[in-house]
Image 1 (tube, helix red, strand yellow):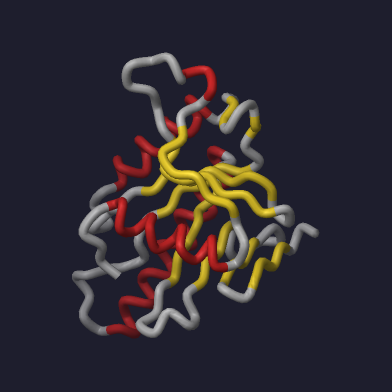
Image 2: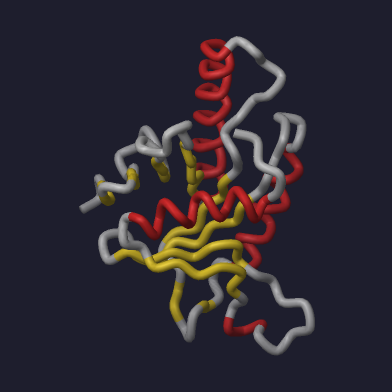
Length: 170
């Protein structure tokens, strides 16, 4: 889906996380930067006892031509991933997320195929090069099947939907 802004996108992701029992926090600054005038803020942190604390840097990209947006997100995460949040908590997993849509392709089947290939590349590239996960949010018209996948198609995949969390690592 196309979202008007990053906040609308993160609202949808957060809503699904809350529906399966996750605690969430938005726009959280690291403890080490609380006194700065313009501190870095993580878009979303969520916690569930099955998966720990996960921080998410969201980007509302509108095309495949925005690779620098992912580059900036990686820079941000690498700069702050060793810091502490929420009163001294160390984040267990860092993720980048962006809407899953290719608006230039009108054929749904072809768009899904291209999106799958692009997502697969992004997912494995950022994990291998930077040890950062890719959080994929899948939104459906009736919202019954909305779901999240983190590190999809790997031995460490985390699947989240309104019915709960499946963690292959447990």
